[in-house]
Image (cartoon, rainbow, N blue to C red; front, top):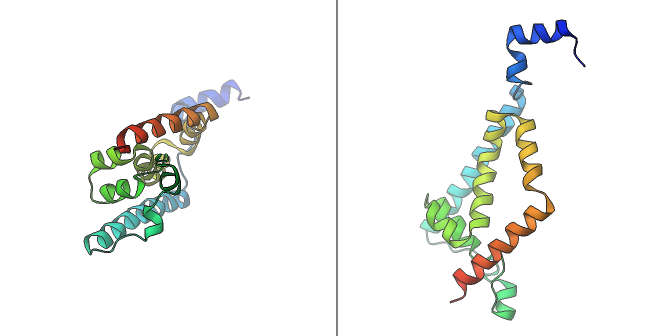
Length: 151
């Protein structure tokens, strides 16, 4: 609990309206390194694809789809990553919205921590990671994949 004097001092400096410091310099460096690493991984994937190097067969075969003919929620994920690595966000989302979204979030989340502050991002992720939300997203994703890839 802060006293009135502390609150007045915070208000005078503007610290009360800004909240806690967003990120330490060390955290900022780590966030940038993580984002750059993810971008480099996507660029490497794109270079391999452009050079004609195909992913290993075990990455391209869905065990559930091979056994039952029903695509799993991750089906089309490699195609989504390849499209994303080429900058084609629309195609990536069309192939697999969940994988495309997760890859874009992996690149953007460290930068969001820098911009919005760790506490805000963690709070938003906790709301998103609620089990009911995750189950709903997974079911919607699976329905989309079954409809989209079942031809």
